[in-house]
Each structure stands twice: as C-alpha cells, then as structure tokens.
Length: 458
Ligand code: ARG
Image 1 (cartoon, rainbow, N blue to C red):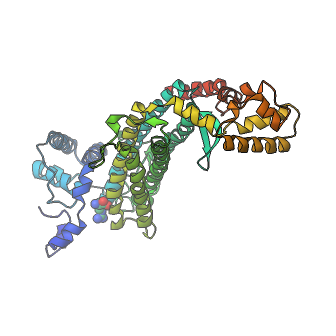
Image 2: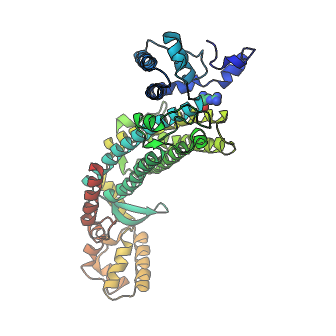
Image 3: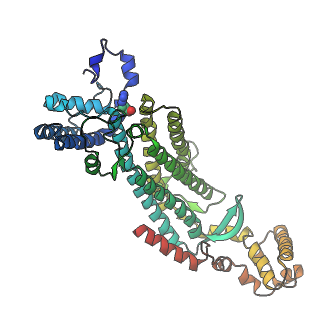
C-alpha cells in the first residue's frame, strides 16, 4: 500500500526506515479508539456542512463495518501501513472511495493520536480503579474476620507492639484507597478532547470542537492546540499512580513472603497460588508475591522512560512521542495482572492465628503496656521503662515471657506488681486498650470498618 503522505516524495521509503518508523505492530491496540474518534469527526464534518450528509453516512457505515470485521477476526491488521491511523483510513478508502478520502479533512494524525491515546488511557484508568476496588473488597473482608486476630506489629522488622490482622490489613486498605482516588483525580484532569487541534495550530475549517468532545464523552475540548498535540502529562500521571500502586503491592508482597517463610509461618499461601521446585520436593514457593514485587521495577521503568522521552521535546508534536506507547501498554497490562493475581492470592491465603498470637506474646510486644501498668501504680515513666527493661532481660535469660512469670518473680524485680499485672499484659488487654481513632482496638476498628464499607458502596 502506498503511504498516505506519498505525494511530496519522489522515492520509496527505504524498507529499514519504514520498519523503524512504523508503529502499527503496537498501536494496532488502539483500533477501537481510532475508529470511535473518526466516527465522531466525520459526524461533526457532516453536521458542519464540511462534507455532505451522504459522505458522512458512508464514512460512518464503512468504519462500523471495519470495526466489526476487526473484532470478528475477518479483517487482519496487516503491517503494510505505518500506523493504525493510516491502516484504518487506507482500508476505508479502498472500500468506499472518494468519501473515505474526505475523512481526514481538518484533522492531523497529531490530534488523532493524541485523541486515541487519551481515549485508551481514560478507559484504562477506569479499569484499574475497578480492579483496585475489588482488591479493597478482599482486604475489607479479611479485616472484618480478624478484628481479634492478634499479631506482632513491627518497627525495624523487630517486634514492637501487639496489633491485629485487621489493623495491619487496614494500613493497606488506606494505601489502595488512595491509589483508587488517584485514578479518579487523573480522570477528572485528563477528560478533555484534543480533537480539532490539527497538526498544531487548529484548522481553517469551521469545526465544532464542543460537539466532537461531547460525542466522545469528554467534559469539553482542550484550550490550546499546541498543548493538545504535545501533552502526555496525563499518561505520566497515570504511570506515576500505577508506580505508586505497584510500590504498595510490592511492600505487601514482601510482607507475605516473610509471613509465609518457614521461620514465621503466619500464613500459608494456597496451593493454587504457589509453585514448587524442580529439584527440592519439599518446596512451596511464594512465586506470585515475588513476581508482583519483581514486576514493580518494570512499571517504574515505564514511568522513567516516558519522563525522559518528554523532557527535551520542543513544541509541538515530535516523533519521539510515539515512544509513549509500548512501555505504557506493557506497564498497564502488568499492573492489571498484578492486582488481579494479588487479590486472588490474598483471598485464598490461610492465616495461622496461633502462630501469630504466640509470636506477639513471645516477642515482648506487651513491654510498653507493662511499663504503662507501673505508671498507673505511681511509678514515673522513665523508671518504669528501666524496670521493664530489666524484666525483659530476666525473661530472655529464662527463655520465657512476661505473662508466664510468677507474681513472686515479678515482685522480686519491683514491688509495685500485683495480681492484676497478668490481665494488664495479656494480648487482649493490650489491643483492647488501644482505642484512639486509627488504632487496633476492636471497638474503634469496627467503626473504621463501617466507614470503609460505606466508601466501597459509594
Ligand atoms: N504513530 C504516530 C505516534 O504514535 C502517530 C502520529 C504521527 N504523526 C506524525 N506527524 N508523523 O505518535
């Protein structure tokens, strides 16, 4: 097939040049958006009397047919054309002749590709938001079931204070909720239509940009034609939000890998979400969590790639910008897969509540509460801190925990200890007393869970 722009040229493009320049092998993903954009453009051209109603009709029907055939697998997107825009236009012309040749009136591939990418990204933003919502629902179900499942909370990966599984999962609920909100923010900012910007300076045809914007579900048209064809901010924002979501998934993956390890055994990843070793028969590996953690680098890479591509580009369109596609398509698919797989792994994961509670008990996570106990008996906090420090040392030497000491042993260390120390340092008490908003205490946790439920119902 001849190039759409062949008129000015006296020589055929060198094959190597054509191959290097072409984007059809990857931008064919945009066929649906390209056809939707062209349909709206043709409808507007006819409404404005720039082409006749019959021509508008013929274009609409021709495009509809092309869409049907691509979806049905009867029209193959062959790589004789440079990009998806050329492919669809050339196919239309080969079928409907002169009317097809009028489709590109008042349009450039620059505003066309800007539109196609925007339509595509807009859909993907919505899809990612929906997947995040599903993940949030999985997390919330676990929170509801484990308001009283005790476990150690960590700082420096050292046991710190007792928390609950609901509380730990609640932290991730907040993260993924923000990720979802970021999708909504991006949508709001990006939902303006670049079609009608032309190559860079608008056109001399009386286009109705409000009309095409409305047909394509945008809030309205963009306001500067040069920015319209040169802007990829929305995509960078999306890749940035996806990178943050991957960072969250990666941290969570890391924790699950630790919890699933032979040493911790807080959880057991379901057989359906684990893999074995070809040589070590005993192995059951957390590959899904590891892959999610690993793929994070790839998504960050896409963000860095596009930021770098865009940083030196003068206004307006430059071919560099064609490089926005492959990395973005890969990153978007990767993130969607990761969310789905990760949610499936969480849903089927088994918690070993006894191991978690034992670990909290044996790690002196109640030491702060023991110090607070002495404070309540009139000991100044700094002294109480020292006394409990000595108590912990004593326990380490005896290989035991505070709750397992006898009252005599406790009183030998400090006379303020009384019988009520044992309930004061039980996991249940330690957690129940943490009642500030955002803390693991079951009463306040249940209130937060109610808020989360309402948020997901909205
Ligand atoms: N394939 C191109 C891209 O992805 C489409 C725009 C081409 N425009 C041009 N002036 N060569 O950016």
